Image 1 (tube, rainbow, N blue to C red):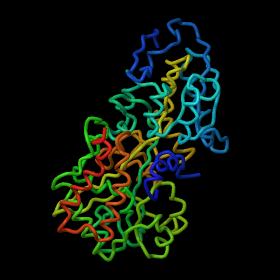
Image 2: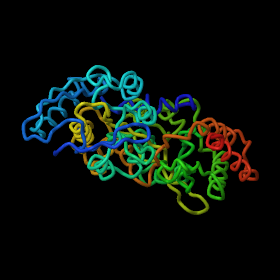
Image 3: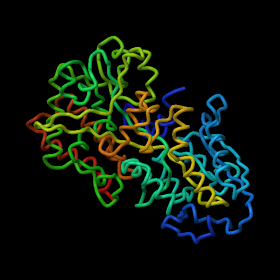
Image 4: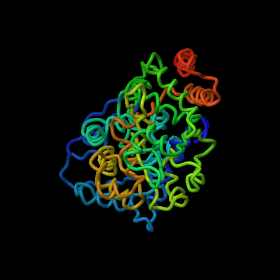
Amino acid sequence: MKNKKIMSAVLAGAMGITLLAGCGSTASTDTTSSDTTKTDDSASSDDSSSTEVQDITLTVMTPAEDQDDANGNWAKTECEAFAAAHPEYNITFNYLQTSEGDAKDVVTKDPTDTEGTAGDVYMFANDQISALVDANALAELGGDAASAVTDNNSKTIAGTVTYNGSIYGVPYTSNSWFMYYDKRVFSEDDVKNLDTMLEKGKVEFPLENAWYLAAFYAGNGCTFYGEDGTDESGTIDLTGDKATAVTKYLVGLMSNKNFKVQGDSPDITGLGNGDVNAIFDGNWDYDNVVGALGEENVGCAVAPTYTLDGTEVQMKPFIGSKALGVNPNSKYQKAAVQLAVFLGSEDAQKAHFDMRGQAPVNTNLATNSDVAANPACAALAATAQDGYSIAQPLFGMDSYWDAAANFGKAIHNGEVTADNAEDKTADFNTSVNAESAAE
């Protein structure tokens, strides 16, 4: 996560890295403008109106780690639990192994080959939704399936699988960032506010990384295609006093001797030797942080507030998700949707956490005692809740990444000052919206 080129890796590559080593009659279907079948757990292409047990075959695609017997074979365990819960089916399961980051490339080769390469149900990174929909490889969810997503997740997490106003997956874990800190330097109260931290220790932040920089602006009311990131008729709004005030705050940080701008990667070594006392990173580096600080000294917390003109403003990182998708070409659409919802359920997410350390997104698990006992998972789960993050839009961001990285560099290099902050911020807003303006 050093620049725009690895933004996709953040959501489609780093997301594959886990922290440590869960009836009725056939209904008619709707078709969206992209020819993707809209389906719920009562809509399918299979005829299950009979009371007889139906013989079906479902192919499930997951990362290899989820099918590893040494890790408990989460996929097989949960699929067998699904079969036990649905005696109306006699299910033969086939399993394919593909990472969430590679799902798009694999499934879109031939979405109709559900028994060979595409699968009926598969796991994918949420930034792949538009490409999967365009390839008629991802079904829009409706009815009870869509309700399961909105009822069991924060609005932010539901937004990560919302495209063109519709839901296209069942989220089961998130991808975002949070703060690691040295518990010997900062208390749990200290880390609630960045300015308080800077009075006591040295804090490093990746100001020149667009994925991180947005959190300051989002916290103060700037929006990225609406408040939930799904308004395609909107823009990236970095206008007015709300944005200029943030820019001036960041300019002020440059003169604070305890604030350090991150280089190409987080200074985990410096965290260990005391050169820095807090960094911002993801769960993929938890083991490295433990190695540097010692597990007893590792603190993890959501991104802090910062004090802007006397008011505390909550930083709000971008957040994405990994989700379960349904292939609209599945012969057994109803059962496929039911399985996707089951694999993304509270119980399945808890099992995923127990077996592989996957941080859950189900709102009921946010304060689960087992999750809370794992510092990084607890921080990531808390970040997924409303008010602590924003869904990264699935469209209209191409111009943002380079423009934001360059703006962070300009602040760091002193090219942006308190005197020219208003004009520079206005220019920044124009740059990030260049893509939508050209359309």
